[in-house]
Amino acid sequence: MPAESTDRPDMTARLGRSHLPTPIVASSGCVGFGRDLNNYVDLSALGAIITKSVFPHAYNGRASPRMAETPSGMLNGIGLQGPGVDALVDEDLPWLVAEGARPVVSVAGTTVGHFSEVASKVAHSPGVIALELNISCPNMERGGEMFARTPSAAADVVAAVRTVIPATTSLLVKLTADVHDIVEVASSCLAAGADGLSLINSLRGMVIDTRRRRPALSGGTGGLTGPAIRPIAVRCIWEVREAHPLVPILGGGGVWSGRDAYELILAGADAVSVGTAHFDDPAASIRIGEELEEILCSAGAASLSDVVGAAHESGGL
Amino acid sequence: MMLPKEALTGVRETAVVIARQQAGSYARLVLRAPAIAARFQPGTFVAAATGGIGGTILRRPLAILDARHSETQAPLAMTDETIELVVSPQNVGTGWLADRQHGESIDLLGPLGRPFAPPRPNGKLLLIGRGHGAVSLYSLAKEAVNRRAEVVCLLDGASHDRIFGVSMFGKLGASVSLTTDQGPKGALLSLLRDYLNMGPWDSVCACAPMWLLPDIVNAAQQFNTPVQVSLESGMACGTGLCLTCTLPMKDDAGRGRMLRVCKEGPVLDGTRVLWDDLNRVPEGCHAG
View 1 (cartoon, each protein chain N blue to C red):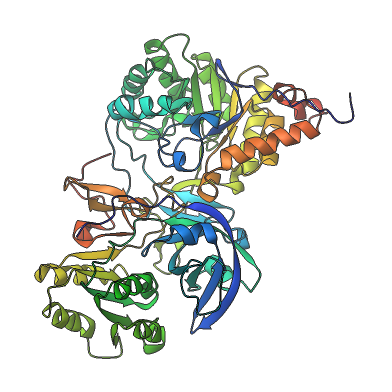
View 2: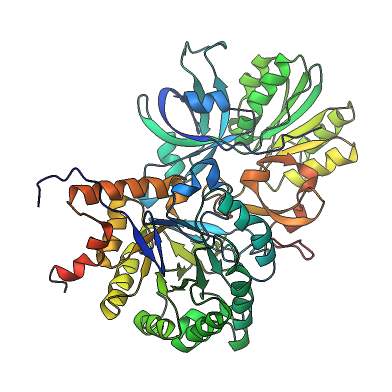
């Protein structure tokens, strides 16, 4: 092995059934449908861009206040505000594809039927490279419990979507860490036909405004994101990778730098999503991709895929 | 009155403090920031990173008092392109920003948001600023005076020392009136009505806490006067990405919707805001 390689590492990354030219992906919910991000970066330079989660119909989302800052993080309660699947297919997806972006559509629903309806409409949209199922939605047909909470409910959604989309469409499932055993939920989704897993969604948290003596968010609880949750993301990626050595994993949670992305890759992520960091730096995805490439170069890695899950090999636990 | 069609998108710039001055509880910072200064328009803001103090990860939106380019007068003998910010320490993040000293740098994104409508030459503008709100009005007043408009400024505050900009607005050549909570109840609104009666005015421009704006908007409407307001809302990003700053307001077609303060505003037609529903998603709100 030469002391210093002058060749750039191959940064190709797996995402479900597809491959991306670079491993950094913009997370769902943090970059809208790309139109504002487009003011700051070239969307075609992102590995992929995951849209805001879309329901069959348009949603207003929650009332203000929708956010609170937390130590090394933030709490958000947007309520999945969005234009609905028809507007996505008619306007946002064609625009993204025309800009050279690689869109992944995040699918939401409060019934299994919603997921199928959205998935079947977007799967055939030109240029869509994968679907990411946001199963952290409440199942209104089962008392409002999150689909992602139980292996069987998660599998129901995956199985239903699998039957209405082409076999060649990459189907990713975004998991939450707010469960008893994330590996169990992951295994259930894979058995039901998922092509890959996206770990992790935001964590349920709350902030109390001590001046008003009430929850700071209008919805009470909200999703915690940012650097504070990164160790939980790393732990979840580690556990799922241990149980499933070959499954494509998109890892994310509090990634702010190339070093952070590298950490998640070593834990087992094939590609890395960046979300909250965009609020501080709209060019975060691009910058982190460049930093990661420098790190791999210095480490003498010939390719990104060589180091995926490497922390498991170095003695592990 | 035609408001600008779109919010500014801003650029990221490392700004260096080249002068600072304490003004009561406010810190006035002059920063070398050529890219932001060149793009500045009255009413726009910057999103300032806090250096991670106390684990804070979110930028703070700060109103821009003024910007100077090399071809304009520079009272503090500044030859670089600069912007001036006025920071009111409210939390650990703004406290850190207010403490920045000469030579230190601040990571800024800006200018952001929708600016005020450009003042009409030889027009008439009625400005209302309470406390820190007056910061956003200063450069508008300056531009209006430069265009030979008649400018009246009503400056309000909880107490006299909380009013911002008394001498600054006076020096511009604007007519300044002061009111505080210590005076007679309703003094500001009463004064506003007196002036509205002396119209017609091109516009009322108001920068004040959200609880005061509805009364100002109502008064302007009663006198058929256009009214621009600068809104405040908790913002995680300032660039339109996060959707945390939305408030219920009417879109271009008059439909109630949850719209972003950072993109529809912060300056917008005050009659568009659904003031009675600020902490709700109004029924009949058009979704999307």
